[in-house]
Image (cartoon, rainbow, N blue to C red; front, side, top):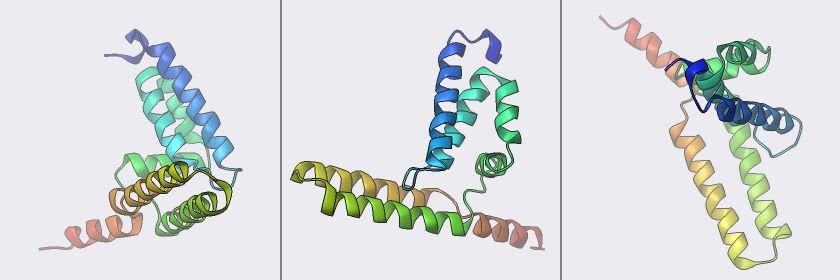
Length: 140
């Protein structure tokens, strides 16, 4: 279905711009992710507006990250390590020092563990993907 004919187009646009806003906030607020929101925005714009998708993909700092992710390259190793370290630091700091209720501490730790697992094992590391591609290209 063409994006302009989609009856949910306004919802997808709203979600796209909301994700872009959260992504920009995440780029300046320590501990808040940004890339995931830009990837989501690309998904929502792909369903609603090729113009805004192209705008997002053309942003100097954001576009390359989103294009790499959409191409199956994942995250650069340095960004992945930084994301995992920040996630661990903020989850542990919150659970140990900031949250008084035990069940909320456990919830935060559980959600943090799922996030850590997802980033570590489900999002490819760009350098590894590129080296695999190079090895396959040189295979006889």
